[in-house]
Length: 258
Image: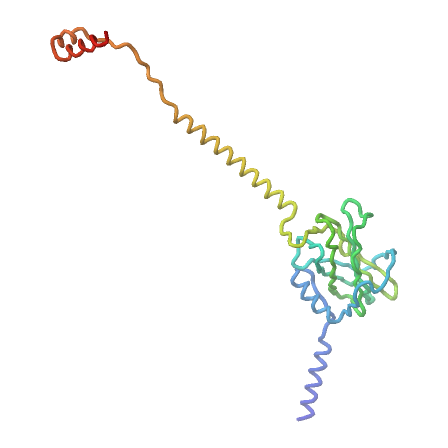
């Protein structure tokens, strides 16, 4: 009985060891990418920044190795100057050999000319990160642009460097635009422009309504003209009033005027 119990414990332990998979992930959503990244970090052996000088040389991508990039919870790619930003690099190895991850690096360029480099970002090295054949893995990369960088649109170029059979390769996982904003700035340039335009339109509308009200008030204050003509007296009415108090009062008024 004791032997059977020990055998079961040994069998369960063996199953757990065999069931521990190589870290894989599907970059279908930012949430899944983040969860996979958290699983990878424990086994990546991240060395730090600028652990190796790769020079200015560039390597070609290895056949069968594809990469993608995800900005977790930051689909707008808004980068706050001086603050750390995280992105996730996904690699799919369809080759026959294991890929040894060496480092991830990136740089910021002017959007109209990539030859004009604005900032060379930090290089993040890895110690024992690998992607076996027919597997996928996700690697985090944390960077920060200079706090003195002027807000605006820039191009970010990210590269992952790896080895296969001691031969160096690299893939560009991201080559696109980012929006750099100041720390504490909640509105972009486009938002400020739209708000200013809306305020200007409201002011013009208020001025127009005020002018219409003033025009209406002027029209209502105008007094209609009354034409005064000569008074005609009926002769028969004068004869009927002769000798009465009314004719005597009229005679007295005429005498006083003289």
